[in-house]
Image (spheres, rainbow, N blue to C red):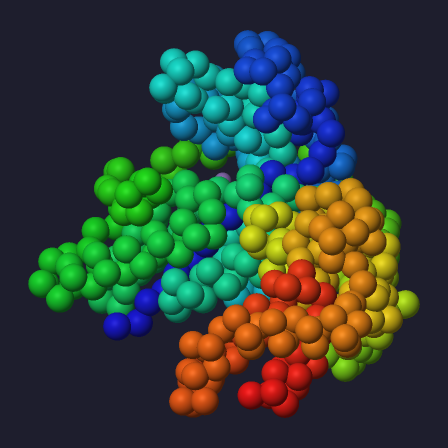
Length: 451
Ligand code: ZN
Ligand code: MN
């Protein structure tokens, strides 16, 4: 059964002030209803300021990075009507497409437009917090080109990467996606308000199975809007699908049309960062990296930049290996992006240099690197504090090897019976005695000589 899936992704644009007023956009740090004014509260008679230039520029840059054609000269905002406690005006201002007919890794982008974020209704607290009201959003609408939940997940990862590279969007943390999915022989269901990549994947998986079962039993799949309940990982019916006409789109008479000047587009194109795809290709050509490895390093702009800084000083193959394995490993363990971590290219260079000069063992370096994303200390200091700096000399390793053999007759017997785990155990003992400062390969040699 063929599946078709399209996405509508909302992400906040990174600006200091809101889309139609001067209120601050740091809504998460502020106490409820402190970043507000008559405009973003939509009080009667309050007129919006002209559209925030920075938001428009950011949205245009993202549209260009998604290979979109840019709307000719003028663009304007519509009022999209609906009723909800977080939207006192009764309409959301949403622009006509500023970009259209784009493409990202085989998925066609139907359009890109801007919107204002509504407030946050918090039924459990009995309040509406309007700090978020009026924060600029970009909405990216794809064609239904994804054929599995996995494809949708990959696309979202790629898209979040492009948004990260643009420097103008807030990323997965601010994402709200609507997902539509239809199976061959069924109607289209839309699932609203998914706020993570994992959530999108799970919702699609659930919905695919639900629709398959209906079709199998000969029950019609209704065209409807469903809600995703993240806590239970299921979707439930909300309402039968409304058409665009239900929103009663009207031109917003309070806002002057925006002019997209050719000079502005030219300027954005000149300043635009390299896209992730192009960076991957360049890393392959320039540093001789395999595609998979180049992709890991390009997965975050800050990590990619750090790699290039490090590779100016340290052998690029060596740097790539350590950064894609170890740096990535400890970042994901700490659930940090590179940019949020305490890693700096300077500290990485210092550590890699210590490894290459054999001032520290590989094993010890892996311990030091575990502290680096959460500490401002230099790797040399971390190594000293953990008692990991230096490599013990041969005589010390030999006495540790002899001690390990003397203390573990069971393991020796197992080894002689052909159990290879026993050797790993003995290496572990030597590491313990030398506090990880023995070179593992040399330790194995020394053990083997004596067994
Ligand atoms: Zn305001
Ligand atoms: Mn929208």
